[in-house]
Length: 488
Ligand code: B12
Ligand code: SF4
Image (tube, rainbow, N blue to C red):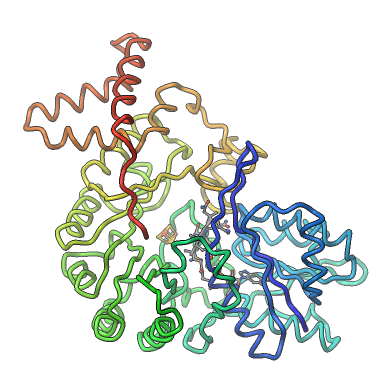
């Protein structure tokens, strides 16, 4: 059977402009390998710019698939839905299926919520999609397959249970990277080899999808799974031979240092057998001086770590990220001492966030001194705890954004306050300012910090005057030019 994946992979902004994300999707590439190994014909429509109806439909007609398989995050699902509607009108007999993170968080939105999608696959798609293709090809019942939901004759929605997680990831084949057209990928992808060493995450950050995804599975205790070190190394060796232009490896996992024994073995083998610089994500609580030294010795050049909020109450009680500001600063500084560049990821526009909490985020970054800061706007993913808070507090609107780098879809009480607008929009610039204060001797450091805080928070200085001074300072800082951006 011929299966054509559709992967919407660009952000479109309110003014119509767009930004191609254009990266490899390991989930699709892994399923493609399984389908090909099972004898199916597979290709991909990697949508990295806006397409109109005619263009999309004629591309599908040229590919002539038996099944159109959409992969979508929540933010990309609106596009997947629109494409499926176009295709349903033009080619009513073509089978459509959708999987991906949105399917795991809100399957009902897809089946029965989207009549132009025939099946939704919850959980891991690796085996379910092959089984679905085989059932459709052989004429057996596609609604007898675990993970698959669909509508039976007569209109009944069939919601099959999710099969157990694949516990031994070494049983999965390497991703089919050839499915992706290098010409469509963004430039930095060509020099970067992206891999994942594990699946799942043990933490319960309330804004993230993991705490909900985990609940789908009967064997949820096995949610965090690592490939064997040898399996990862052999894929990397293969990847290096396949792509001689590779300059660095990127690990997309969040928790590479979860298992100390695994990590120790990995560092030794990576250094001896691969030796390319690598970039990765890490979790502050899973790092100490010794682990950081091991990372550095193995070739780690850049590490991205979530701070998300610098306010201990918001971070701990609302986001469920249990770490202290001192832990964060210690880990960032230790990375610097070992020659590892750092990227901090931060969020603004969260429920309950006040101006002084945004300042806390700025100040912890000013102390941690990451080489690059990523600041995204909180987006409530369906059915997560943060989503529930947004519903309970009445913050949710029916707005949609393609990206976490747009404005907020929430109606938050403080959003329009000029102090809040300035704080949220100038996190980078303000961090540079507070960073310089930190280098002043006491008591100057404290005085400068207090004065700057006062421009946002004081009710003793008239607001007009405060904001005028603040704007002058911000303009001056911005005139110094853009900050360096670390590739990762
Ligand atoms: C690497 C990564 C990226 C990369 C690559 C994108 C990608 N889609 O793979 C980049 C940097 C480009 C990226 C961008 C974004 N990402 Co991202 N990303 C990840 C990350 C860390 C790993 C993805 C991965 O490779 N997983 C491993 C593979 C094997 O799993 P998988 O992709 O989920 O696929 C499996 C199943 O979902 C299913 N499946 C997937 N597709 C399909 C299709 C069919 C037909 C079927 C049957 C099954 C199926 O089967 C697959 C195999 O088991 C995840 C977190 C995570 N741990 O998954 C976040 C994650 C997917 N990203 C997220 C977000 C929000 C984004 C952005 C919207 C952020 C932004 N910039 O605004 C964009 C969206 C880009 C896009 N076009 O979708 C969220 C999505 C939340 C949500 N509600 O949808 C996640 C879950 C992070 C989080 N925990 O919050 N991301
Ligand atoms: S540590 Fe990262 S991946 Fe894990 S639950 Fe928290 S935000 Fe999600």
